Length: 74
Image (cartoon, rainbow, N blue to C red; front, side, top):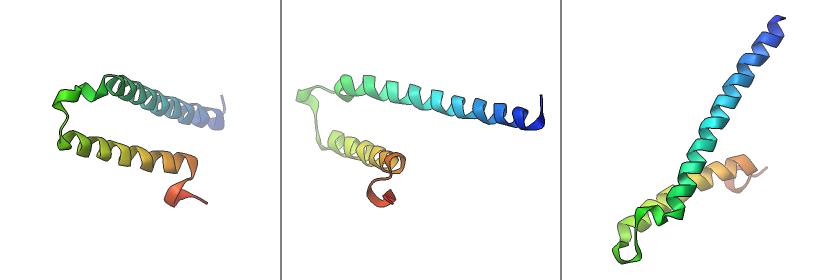
């Protein structure tokens, strides 16, 4: 195996590892969201709204980068 092939396999392994971790995080978030972030309508308060707004803002930042939208638009 050439040096370039070896270098490529390391970068591919690192890419797949990062993607796998992202997929796991997205799956956990989807499950948490399906459970209404472990809340019920009778217990919702403004703290929950603030927390979800914070999550939304971070996710928007990520999706804006990924899809070149918002401040990351070309």
